[in-house]
Amino acid sequence: MKDYSQLHDPNAEYTMRELSADTMQVTAERGGGRDVKITDVQTTMIDGNFPWTLVRIYTDAGIVGTGEAYWGAGVPELIQRMRPFLIGENPLDIDRLFEHLIQKMSGEGSVEGITVTAISGIDVALHDLAGKILEVPAYQLLGGKYRDKVRVYCDCHTADEADPQACADEAERVVDELGYDALKFDLDVPSGLEKDRANRHLRPGEIRHKVDIVEAVTERVKDRADVAFDCHWTFSGGSAKRLAKALEEYDIWWLEDPVPPENLDVQEEVTKSTTTPITVGENRYRVTEERRLIENQAVDIIAPDLPKVGGMRETRKIADVANQYYVPVAMHNVSSPVATMASAHVGTSIPNALAVEYHSYELGWWEDLVEETVIEDGYIEIPEKPGLGVTLDMDTVEEHMVDGEELFDEA
Image 1: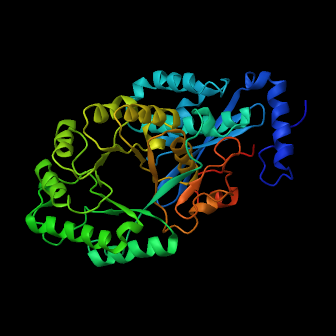
Image 2: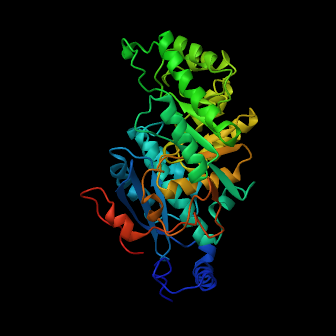
């Protein structure tokens, strides 16, 4: 049989047509992919602005899939714990393998938490791998696409995030110089008026300070950009309601995570008390948890984090439930280009996608991690290449690995 080990070598001198022909021959010789088996699963953690866990799944056909799990201690170890449950399996059986891992890892807590996050990274790698085997983009595995490009919102920061004018200056710069028309700023920043932050109570002066930030940013960019504001689960129910009420006169895109995530009754009460759009979801796992927010109408916009919530198909399931309640999806995302592109593939496959977050605009080498351009003028154009459509730059991966990590094996 022909040696296909170089199919995914970025230095190989293949044209796309030659690569496609070789891959088609591999899958034809293996029953259209039904005889392809997983041979290994490896991880490498990258030291970005968050520690990104990259996942690679290898096959006996020489075809490799790349994924990513949300950052967190213990995720690589959990993925290696699941490795024996994947070896010898057919990578095209994505749904079955997801349920297989959920059942096998039930003792480790596959309802939520880092076990689900670890499975998410495997799910993303399986979509990349299956797309390559079947010679289709990953979005095609999710049912096709609604749009050719997905909007990106830029999570913005300043040296003094409590200064309204500094935030407004940065908003203007990101719009004018970087080309984004969707932004987000933190609103859980100190005002200097706090007496006791542990009680989660906002005094009137603190609310006025947050209103000043919102007013300065929204007035500066006006209709040139949508702007959201993140509270990071900081405030009490009563304070969140007063803050949301004070912001109703401003054109904000959404107010994110105003109260702690545990009590969904309080979340529902806050959301229903205001016309300010409320966004929640990154701290929930799988469709079983996210649907409670949606069905209780405790959220105006749902914000799942794909490499944390369960992966690509699980995010699609969440979007399907949200669509039944006419709720848009704005995917939270603090990932490398790999999971960012996975989120974009889901974003193009669902009708109710608003945008995908980008959290690394201050990290100069973020896009160097892959060979392709990912974000351009505030949008991600969905690639038509098989799988996710991104190729790891192994030199950059090696340069930015967390100390003690090992580089992936060659395909």
